[in-house]
Image (cartoon, rainbow, N blue to C red; front, side, top):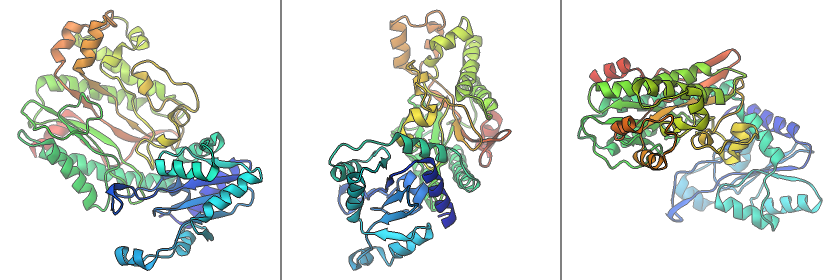
Length: 456
């Protein structure tokens, strides 16, 4: 964990952003797979980690805005726990490491919250995303829990701006993520299974005493944007899409994507579309700087795709109009990227509209509605840049049957690419005071870099 002063200062700043009342932060509990003793790997709630730092199950914290006191609620381990888990520091000692002097038994949490409610104090809650925490809050309050807009906005404001020590954690995660991608580029070949690659990238993360920041996407069907199946065998002529990342020791995320040929080199057809996707990526990356709305980043990526598709004969007409009506979403039905930090989609549990759009309404247009980050960029933001090009047969058939965007889409030419698959590159970017910085060590992304690695 960070120094105790880091957590103390974070809680002090949070309290300063709120007028009064009690902030309740719920940690996560162990989650059974199929019976109580067989559990999924534990992952602490990210906001609890941010303010309290303790990576243990069954904890909660109450921050009294009016007195400045923080109390951590939890139970000391019994000898029955120690037999199975080994000796552990006391809760009192662990709380002291994050600057908290007061601890109370877990059962006291309900008493403290109910007392605050009975005296008319505000109890500030974050949206519960786990069923057990939702039930706990509903039981304590005897009512449906209502998240605090003021608390959500305060947390988003703090967690959006990454400190130097957070950036160092993210870069550690990104460096390991690059290792995972380079290993995959070296190993793919015809006859190998997708599951072999998925297993290897997870092995690299675990061997570094880390773990993946999300389930890996490792597939020859890159046209399925979040394809978590790994049952295909690679064939000559396939493109392989890998979207995976690692967590740092303090659970900060890395998130990278690569696309590369199963054969040692790209075919000419693969190279044409890959270089167009890469041009879109570079156009987006060039846009990133403070004060620029991330919608501009998105549209610059889209413009590169539309202009490139027009050169290839797959699109026609005025680029601006095609973008305005959403014709480009035939090839890029997603957003250009998202915020990243303690969560790979940072603070997604707090609400995409507040986190990514600063409360502004989102578009409902197909494609643009999937842009998770549209707000003006600020120094300290960490975001992903990941435009892509996807040929989705069912989408092609649906839009052609509806005669949609005929003024811009040349379906007869698009159909020649319908089985091509999908391509994306993804990098993690820090917005600096004067521009941007791509985080971590370089990942091969040009055709020449990938082919050189594959040849080695």
